[in-house]
Amino acid sequence: MTDPAERELIESMDAKLVPVEQLKKDHGSWKDYQIKGLAMVQSSFDEILYLDSDNIPLRDPSYLFDSKRYNAPGSGRAVFWPDLSKDHVDNAIWRFVGDPCTLDHWTFESGQILIDKTGNDGLNLAALYIAAYMQEKDHQDFYFKMCGGDKDTYRWAFRILDIPFTVSPRWATTLGSLNEEDNNRFCGHTILQYDLDIIEGYSRELPLFVHSNLLKHMWSHLGRGKTFTHLRRMSLDAFDEPTLNHAHMFVYNPPSGVMCTDVELWDDGGLLTEDERKVQFVLTEELGAVEGNPFEGFEDSFYDYGGRVGGW
Image (cartoon, rainbow, N blue to C red; front, side, top):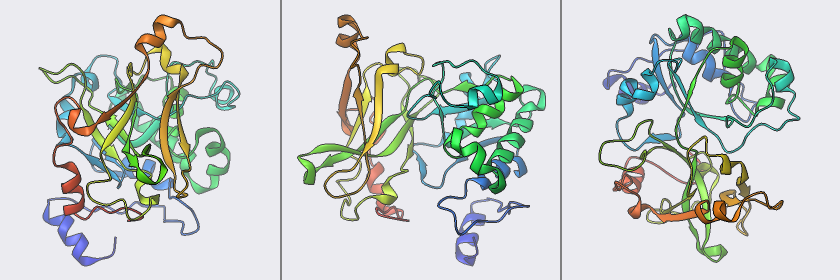
């Protein structure tokens, strides 16, 4: 970050800009995965809420440091949010870390990480060092074949050390809009992640993080009023809901050629019972109908403060 005006703006909000030592950006890479782990290691803070640059909280997230899930005994004081899939039994990472293959956990989506480096008697910091090692340019060719980028290096680092961590209580939701050029088919471009605790008066955890990971690859005419309009999620979406093993979140290419996400219930083998099919299904919701109306004013704020489609 070399623009003086940008640096002054950030510093005016009492932020401290700290360069990541021992690394530099690789201008030949699609993404600089290797920066994230070491940035957390070298942060001056013990407790960190890491956010990707395309991840926008729907409200001030600082209260997460006081959340019950983060502070619960046995939490490891490390919280991760789920990604779209689970590891296949053939993934060599199981044998590498010595874990039996299970469907207990989703892969991690590292657009947000809540961690106390002193947690697990200081071993959380060691886990971050291991993850950073896996992310280094010289080691990516090996580890990223099994981990799909930086995101699961954190999970496997914790498993290598055999220390506990905590996961968000809800599976990820895909957020986007209806594509007029494709018969109003839902086109997701954003991963929506949830709060850690249920706020008093509500029936479930509210949406919290809008991680627009595909929006920068979308067509530029989406525009205000047509960007964040609907979400698609499973009716039962607790992270440990067993029927979610039949949920399939996927990426497809509409006629316009961009990338969209969608979700479906996938049960070609007929493994779901009739009763399970009655309660587990795909929900499409308009954002204004979401409990608590957490998206009120969000899209206008997104564009008013410089948000854009089709690249940053």
